[in-house]
Image (cartoon, rainbow, N blue to C red):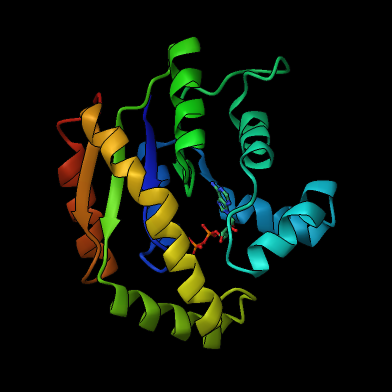
Length: 195
Ligand code: ADP
């Protein structure tokens, strides 16, 4: 059963590629940004705590996000533990990555691959500004976009070393058409994932 993570800066196409990957491999697509936006929309306690961080382009505190993910993948003492999944937008910090690693060891569900989409920064800003105009997502304004990119650099870039040293990082060029990127991802995954 397929277990992988999608690591990519804002605007790199995580949502689109994440859904495709999950569908192709027959596993749930767990996107922490979508889950958090859903909590905000429903006005849950978590949503109330997360909203100001998200609107400012900062990360939601680790303990809140880890708790939310644990409830989805299992292991908090209630219900089943998922065998397969595509985690999209998580882990984003070393603390989250260490948690995910320990979880995998504890439940014999270590991850097969971490797909990292790479897109030049000016292209990311262009895509996000356009999405802001089209979809009106509250954090897609130029100022907040710059903050999110800086936050990614600071917090998420160290994960590259973490996963590279474990031999599961797959770097993928995220430019070009959606289909081209999907093909590159599948080609990169081939040696890593059980048939
Ligand atoms: P993007 O990658 O374009 O910023 P996401 O939908 O993945 O979009 O995330 C939106 C926001 O949700 C982030 O800016 C952050 O505030 C919050 N978020 C999502 N995933 C995490 C996470 N793993 N840890 C902390 N905050 C997160």
